[in-house]
Image (tube, rainbow, N blue to C red; front, top):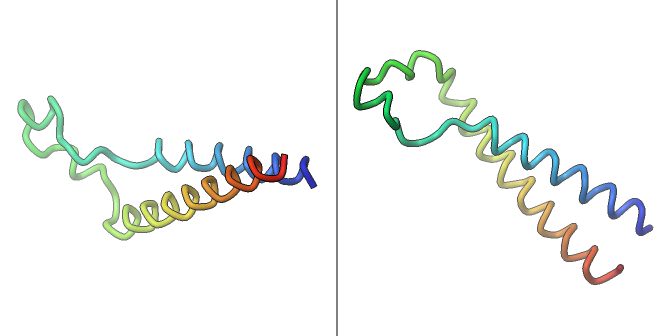
Length: 74
């Protein structure tokens, strides 16, 4: 039981890290002041961002729950 719970926590943590790294930044940064909005052509579809936000939220909740269960049971 403990090994399975730790495996779930490890998997959700790695997946959450990947989901956060795949998201684009909300600010334009230095490229916005120099080049304008040139990066909007490379962002992809609008639905992709919403789906990635939803996946990140689900993974964060799953990580939180698995961390609580790990702390309580182990």
